[in-house]
Image (cartoon, rainbow, N blue to C red):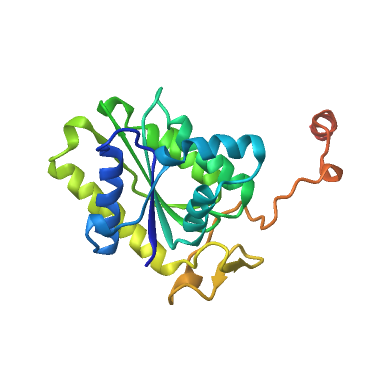
Length: 230
């Protein structure tokens, strides 16, 4: 199982990276030192240049390829201004601009670190909507670690639970780009283990959401239709 960690931690050593490594180790059974980690701190300049040039530098392209080819992704960000960091969001912006299907159907475990437990809802109001928008399969349990959580058994239990859910999803779902979506919204592919067909990706019943202006009904017309019906 190919699990990749994307860490937006800025300091060295980084508690954000440490949380990602512990989650990956729990999901794969590997030692934390053996877990592949993409440090966005090292790619900050390349990410900024990608916005202006439209093309990724080799290191950034390699990171994008690693995420796209992974069976599952663990994303970890420090909390800045009650949300994910700008660097974290920028990486997934340029990834989506390069390949809008990069995370489609891919299991993603969301995690964050902060100085206080008061920001723990960042997982639900910022990270989960972001990756739902990118059509990833977000792992049900997210993990938030405040400074006081380190060394606490409660954090260990949350890590084990979330890692188990990621491992189950990564083993059941084909990697993004390796599968296809049929008319019922079911992911089929040759990269998943048995049981993959039993998991559906909710996309509101629509497989293709390309915008077509010819199908847009002006709001005034919809409102008028409702008035006449009433």
